[in-house]
Amino acid sequence: MSSSFIIVVLLFIFSSAKGESLVIGSPQIIRAAPHDDVILPCHLDPPFNVEGLTVEWSKPDLKPDPSDRLSRVEYVHLYRDRREVTDMKLPSYVSRTSLFTDDLKHGNISLKISNVTLADTGRYRCFIPKLQSRVKESVVQLVVDLDFAKTSSPETPLHPGHNETGDPKDSTDDTADFTPGARSSLTILIPVMFSVILLTSVIGGLGGYFYKQQHEEQKQNLKLEGDLLDQQESGLLSGASCQDKDVSLM
Image (cartoon, rainbow, N blue to C red; front, side, top):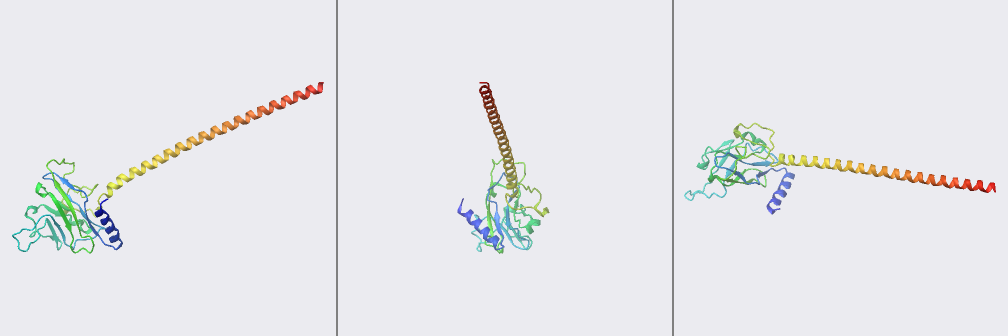
């Protein structure tokens, strides 16, 4: 277990106790083939409404343009004042990125990138600068590979068990669960629990059956021993009676 993972867990426990929400991105590498539509998962846990906050998606490994004296940051996607800001956006991402705006109230700040290219490979940072939390950002890694085998889904799901294939702006699912792996954990846990219960029942039934068989054998053995003792006692009594008769005849 890495030290960074332990630190994140400790921060999550402490922040939860303080009522803070953490920005959490996907710990897994997001893989796609060229021209796929992908979703870079990122959310707040516990869920927190960020509709009125600024949400920044950038590429932290991308250096500012040296010709720009202000060293301004260009964004993959910038959400501010309840709308997308395009004048500070990287040209290669224009008209290709969007947020699930209807789900911002649930703390979902995942980014959809359409028609990805090899140049889109890299690390992406989701950041909420004015969030009152010790963890305001997270990094998600995307790999676009020519040899990537496409799955049945046309784009990377928001999280396991929840395929989001429509336009993020049309999203109206107010009950979506944005905890990564939550449903997949349940789908694994339920069969395991059922198997354990079934195995316990079978073992218990077999144990009861063998115990009953052993008990019946013990009863039969005791009965046989009792019959033998009765027969021996009857034989002894018969022998004694014959001896008494012989003595009387004498």
